[in-house]
Length: 438
Image (cartoon, rainbow, N blue to C red; front, top):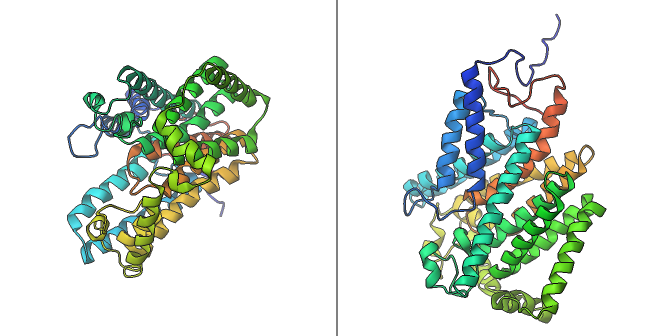
């Protein structure tokens, strides 16, 4: 009895023309959603984390479904591991919420995690190489435009917290740090740190010119200075260093040399660094004292407190959003591993760890095939991981979109290589796509 042939990624038969149109419209909508992902204050309903970007992701999903473009195996053979980890996370939080907390809060937070780590990767990752490139450009453009606008507002309003309120909460914080449309200076620094490697990747692959690369990099790094974020500065240095360690060459070095020349000219001209950056970053580095790095000491105290809470809730957590209720400071610990452990028990924390292993595995597996894409993926993940050690719940789509854009670039060559003669993803399939890494 002969074995049945392997199922192709996509059927060769051309789909109906309307499915092709729906798929194309869906792709455009998802690109716009990726562009707007960092604009977290642009909310459809006040008080609910459902942004204009989220609405576009939902609309794009409908068009992808109509165009038969949805793939429920976006990560190939690692997809079951990813969704198993997500299930562990959600079940752990559910058990804690039913036993000790508020099940109604689990519904809200569970939906946020499912949206961020199930629907969005399904829409963004299983795409062609060209679509993955367009996604990366959309993510980069969205952040650069936001930061350019933020820098302009900062200069125009002289860093005024009160005057900047017209653009949204914490656009400029009380410490005169740039939060932009992220509404938080640290989270703004996070999206910058995860976006900077995209500049080097797109410039290296000649998808953007050197001039655009230098200008984009300059805008991002100037904005990073205005955030005054020590974690953001450190994450950016680590991610860029990792990218160069894996796949740096002279073409990438050109951007660095151009940026150094511009920076040197600015320093010689006598332009002062933003006060928040000097106080929170330069001071900490010069004195080698992390206690000067913004709120480091306060966050360290929250971590110490978290260990005392975990001692009593190791197996069954205290439930979603209950940490702030039992904390002396009435604030969640800024470490997602400890927060999930406290609120969802070991099951939720191990679920998150399981998910985090997937992008690492993807990057390592791609080193032999495409070092540039592997370097990008590992560099973006490095920033994501560093902020996961300094952030509470991370279901805001602004965290995941840069990571998924880099994962799409890692997987796109593998999808193409798996079936050389198969029509591209731009051709809508007649049944659910089943990409794999082989």
